[in-house]
Image (cartoon, rainbow, N blue to C red; front, side, top):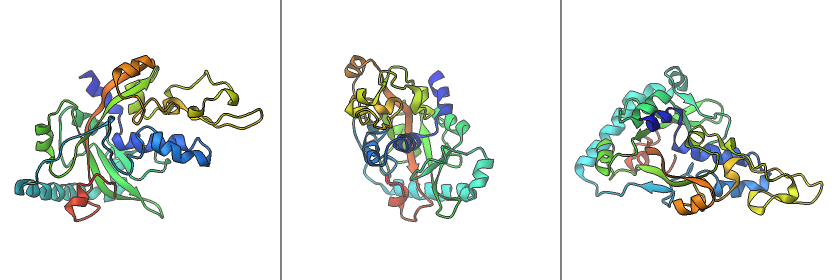
Length: 280
């Protein structure tokens, strides 16, 4: 129960993904940015989900006529109940707050923390998702494309299938995460990438290659900050088991967050697009 209540502070999986990697990229010189996109908190999952030691997905199931019917009803329900949020100001008035709005993202999460916490407690309601998903318009404002739903981490495939059919899309979970000493699960949930600095690196000449660019006297060096500075840790870290994590003085988490799924009914009439793993 305590762990579930902590999730009140979480904004979503995709938020952690895109925001953390982008935030660190902003603190690098321009020619360092590409490296961060592949080694940041959860790599490039702002664009799409990748199966790995750090990403567990539900297995696909054969499509059935009943699943197709359920999928159509899910899309119809979401469009009917969430259409009012096409005006993002209405979403804000209803408690959906944009997360790190100034940081460039592929899809912006407007998260309702109370509803997110309820979902992690087992309350699932298509009409009241924990997060709404928006794309930023070129000339200001936001375009509603979908929503993100959550489920308790202990839910079985059968329980997840009862919410949204596993034949339509994949529920996903962040697994086998090693965090460095001093970084907590709450830090991750709050997007606190600067939870742990590297006080042992005092000058450019002392900076290891993996933490930034070393250099001689007088060279300006912009260091990566927080636990993302070390490629061993985090959502795409090289460490993915408890033994290696403890050997690196880290703290191991078999799973962070619960189960999550994105649905994009406002992006297309095509059900394959609406339930795609690709962000629109």
